[in-house]
Length: 98
Image 1: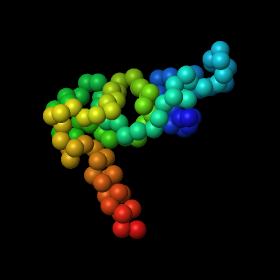
Image 2: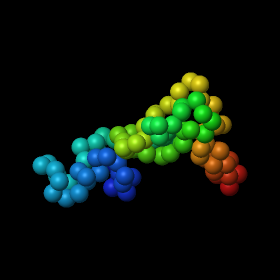
Image 3: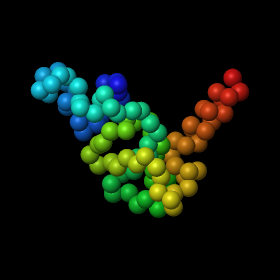
Image 4: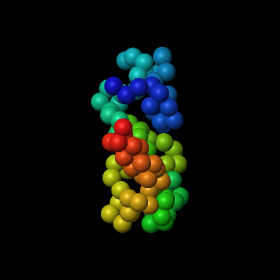
């Protein structure tokens, strides 16, 4: 189940507040959603611009006004030109050496 903390900022986070749903106190996607690496871009950003996408860890059901979330990068975007990718790469290398 997706934690309440991971749902913060989601358009449907309103439904995670007690009393805002008919069948409990959680969003209907909290049980079936899963945490994953996604790629965020502003809705007014040019996708072909370097560093327009940001790699984030969000629930599979997460959505936010003014932002678009992709499960995979478009074919024309190079992974090295994604904000946050280099940071994740360094963290993985550090974990392997530790």
